Amino acid sequence: MKAAIHPAYNEVRVHCACGNAFVTRSTHRGDIGVEICSACHPFFTGKQKLMDTAGRVERFRRKYAKNAPKAETKAETKAETKTEAAVATKTELAKS
Image (cartoon, rainbow, N blue to C red; front, side, top):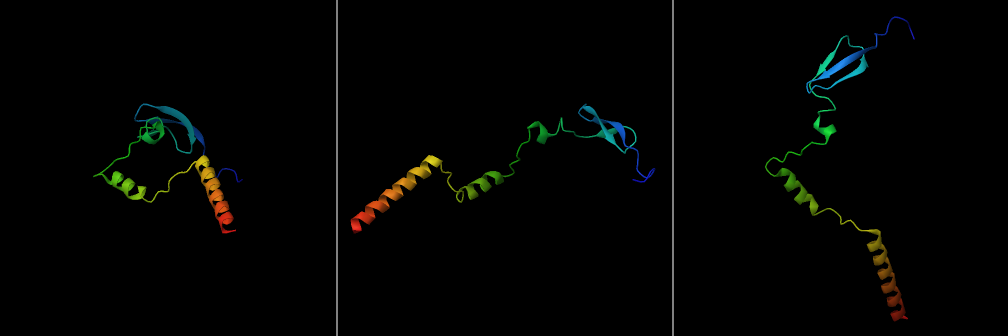
């Protein structure tokens, strides 16, 4: 690396509007002020809400619920496979 071409990478203090403050490193000089941080952002706090404007979310769910495949359990799948095998065996015996 060439000397004296890279900016200084100093510790800076970040202040959020919610009152949270933490120390990080940056090439920025002085303190940094932010409006929102991970302590107050709804995505990180788990308080994020889905805004339903004029019932669009519910309409979307109803529309695509028709096409959604039914979730099958392993027990149901095994039972159906055994039943199909038994029916196929009975059919073969009846033909003979």
